Length: 369
Image (tube, rainbow, N blue to C red; front, side):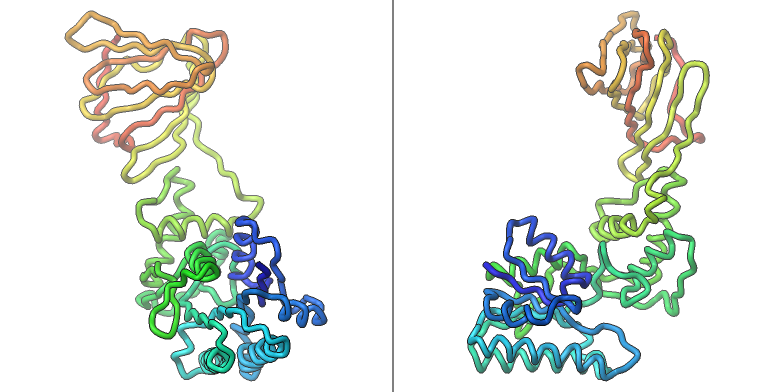
């Protein structure tokens, strides 16, 4: 299948083209302002499907909206007609096509032109009136508030929010691309005369801003947002894509003493926290028990032993562990326990605990194994 993508350098198109190639669609004609215009006829002649994603989203001259959103659509259709190519055409329009503003009027004109073309030629026409689209590779300080907020907040730059109570409808780029490829395969989500991305998120502008600031703060707190919330998960991924390239990494606070070190890595609101424990040779750590707090230990380097004993028993249970054979040891409640480095090198243990440490309620009681 030969696929023509107009506006190939744009946000949605870049994501679409990347995924088409991931799915082994190898004949993708990428057409943008930078493409040699002489190729346009060839592409229109040979295309089996057209993703018409080109358009003008922002301009100081209102006439450019009509020229880009109606004029180029007219050129596309006349060129397809010249070669009697009645292949399906998918148009990325906007919910603003319902509004009486220069941009909306131009998008509506492009839609009407396509629908008329479909009636005349029998070509399948798919029009998506997209709400705000967010995700990686979107240009900040252009036409996406989310992209601008992510870019600026990641760089400690100011942002402007005129009304934090404004409710936004948003679709995530991966959901958009999945739907577009479904359409390519004849499985579009049609609703009346138009098509829609089935997953839409509704949230206020203020809530978006608060979330993005919390993502920035999460590095200092060693926290991970609530990934069970679909929108938070997608927005967090988007935010990370806007990090400055010299700020991908961040330091952790290592609590170091003669025994080694203990470093908190990740904290979550509902799934506890993960830490890295390093023990020097011959060192024993622990010798305590918990009522409700439970842990999992995974030795990834070195060798040692994890010992358990019930407070009312003299029987000691031992599990020998090593980075040579990765295995998780559960630390059940009600057993005092310790971990000893039996090797000649540092022993590194990944430790998970089911709750974030609370100094007011540590649920940790000293007792030698």
